[in-house]
Image 1 (tube, rainbow, N blue to C red):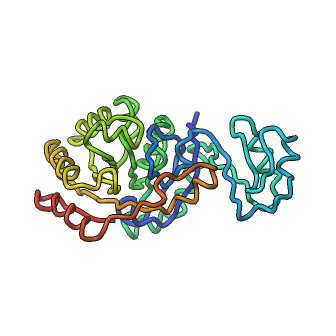
Image 2: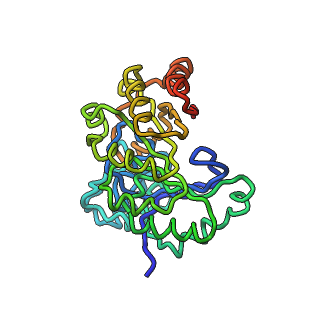
Image 3: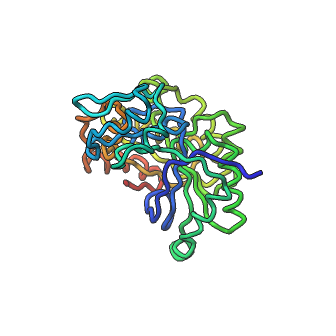
Length: 299
């Protein structure tokens, strides 16, 4: 029987999630709770409701469909108790698309034809398919079967991962991938925990164990107020070098592009006033890795 997973987006023609032109498949569920997350709808492993106030005409159809259970109209729009409300009923009743269910259960058999649409672009550019999220390895069985199918079809595959999963399911999930895009949020375990909710012991263990086995790109988010310091990037460079890693390092500057999604989920975005790092800072931190012989790119 083919495995199924919870998918929340498919992004075609991506140029920043591995080599060449790629299709990125976003899976729901993540063990981290990063303050700067640009995909907050990915954290919950289940389907959930997003509410776009700009599309809402306050017609009350959603309230009627749910008989007022867990839902009401206020001066600021529709208010939900997400532990009670029937999200399917609400979304179905909305005439304007202001209510959207995020997350669909799809089997590998259903997903493969969608991914094969862009094979000509993959062949021409050296691209392929990237599994992202969320954390793809949270859905290890689905992830593994999909990667094996892509491998059999001769399609390059990559997995974006935070690495926070016990080794056995983590390794099963990524084993068939051609490339691992491995995020390292912070090297200090206490500071790692302070902004993402877990320490980095399992993450570093998995990284060290995976380095001799897989082709990896190390990705370092650059987050002002959290890890955007010389001390952090010197520690990151030391860790990467001590692991025996010889691949590329990518610096991912902070951005707030996903902040609007928090409003749609009726959550507070805690980094609203954070400014991105300057180009001068990014080049200086990139030089730390380049001076050690590591190819470094700034996204």
